[in-house]
Amino acid sequence: ALITHEIVLFFEACPGRIIGITGTRGKTTTTTLIYEIIRATGAPSVIGGNVSGVETLSLLPEITPETQVVLEISCEQLNGMAAPAISPSVAVMTNIYPDHLDKYDTMEEYIDAKANIFRHQRANDLAVFNFDNPVTRRLGEEASAETWYASLERWGSFARGSSEIVPFIFTDTPLRGNHNLANILLATTTARLLGVPDEIIATTIKHFRGVPYRQEEVAIMDGVRFINDTTSTMPIAGQIALQSFEEPIVLLAGGNTKHLPLEDWAGAIVQRCRDVVLLKGTGTDELLPVLQDAAARQGRKNPVRGVFDNFIAAMDYAVSLARPGDTLLFSPGFTSFGMFHNEFDRGDKFVAYVRKLMQSG
Image 1: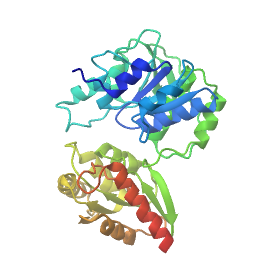
Image 2: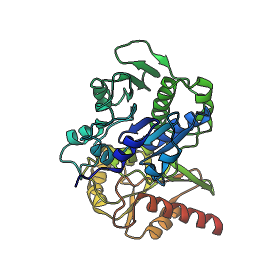
Image 3: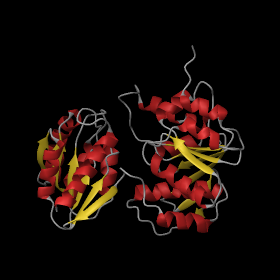
């Protein structure tokens, strides 16, 4: 029997235009923002794919040829799209970092899976790539569709082979960090190519508060800001989170390993965090000596205050270390297997703890 991935069945049956988004980081934020922008035009639109809580096949009855179908597409789903040779009409690639090396033998294999998003496009399709990420910049050269690049460094977007930059209409955004500006720029570029007016794009960005579990501000209590960044399951995500906050940081991190390099993240932890509380796991075991080295190299004190095998105990201790004006950042940098069902369960436990703290406060 032929095993077909659910996403393939969806592609084959879907009458609407499919806008597919993939990448290592920023997929869900970019997908959600593109959907919100299209929805603001009044055009019929749906969101699905790898977005939590959406059963993609169940969307089919509401999709007509006029519907814009915005899908977050994971690596696993892209693997399923290789043999039937399908790609969305509009492909968006946020970035590629080393990830899932527990599932792929090499980084090239992982990149190859991601490339299915644009590999089978036609010449009149659209592809949008992040120019500032070396891997996605290179992949943009291989696309057969009309190809555009979005670049934060150049503050705008441009067609492949053109030097004419369409400036980024920067508007207020409640989101923090350059990685979010990059997500916003990709969504803006895509929406413009789909013919959405700048005013609608700007207004949507201004009111877009991001996606739960991703640097989500849960509360500010006694002057301490509580941030839930549980989808940080890899070191680069932990590093990006640290760059998004100016305030002194009490970091709660740790978990199980994906066998990714830890040096850059460890350096950033030593530099940015006053206090670090770690959850037990195979990744944490790997991180401890690397943090020790980073502290020695920077001539700073190792910020690790303790390693806990109990989440509540770890939270109690992290809260006791936090002072008014601090950010208590839950950005694990590793997977959640073992102590939690998954990364969302982990984030929910963090939020539940903070809510309970507020009630007792």
